Image (cartoon, rainbow, N blue to C red; front, side, top):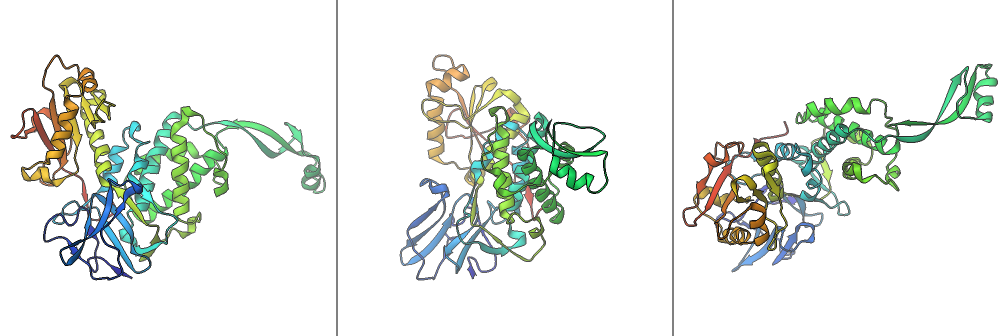
Length: 423
């Protein structure tokens, strides 16, 4: 099975420099087509096209693994917005993003997993999917444990000594007790009210998968959260089966449960519901998948803004014109996260300027920010910058750089966490 770029993965957003577009020679690959993220035509993971008499491939802001030609040619895109620096630590970005409970139900939108497609063999160290699912799951469980596990009535059978509770199981009492000369014991069936119920058993089972994976592959992120979560499941059994997921209905108060159950199923399905399949190996098989780094950056930036400005930030306000990423009320500012390195090069994308200018003239947005008459609202673009010293957005005003070509427009670069492996 061949791979693009010979023995290494393609960096994300590969092909936007004239010398970076990868040549292809396989005659049977279909060209002039887009491979879209979740079938959204405006979001392509990679595209194949012709340019003169040459055929090329170009990636966008998605990382993952997929088939170019089934069972023969694979494309693998790594988390590296710039080929000259180390890999972006997308797991750290995810962990920071999920530090605010409001983002947990949005994280599911950042990835697509094609379980129905033929699995792809990759190096264990190139597995981007499993650690993402595990980190997301651990963060969701922390939010659930913070609220408290669901408790409910459920039947329990027990061999009681010198007492009776609930319904006597006559035939079992005879077989297990009287026949064996244990006259003081009675087998009973009764209802108890506690957390040892099917839904929590499923969560604990997936937690055991996650803990084994984190331990085996030295995934140190969120270890403190694991220590916080584990005691809450001490009295919950992990005896469960994949079909136990069917028919479970959760009260809307516990909205995190639905997402956690879905994620628990993905994690266990990833390993064929067999915890013993989690083992170190040079090669593993993974379903094709894609991760939207642009949306991940948007959620990461939201967390940084909330760390700095708390409730002063409104995320994706529904205006007349669209959904600006962030409204910063006290500063009467509209901000958008743009996962584009172009802003680090003293340049800009005019389409972004037009888009945010439209938000600044949207009457619902202006009303929300308290704009008076024809007051001009400031606009901000937040972008990744490997050379920046900004690892947070505390004291935001002191970090703003004007975009000289436009009045009231600013930008601020954020240094993304980097990693050369799982830590």
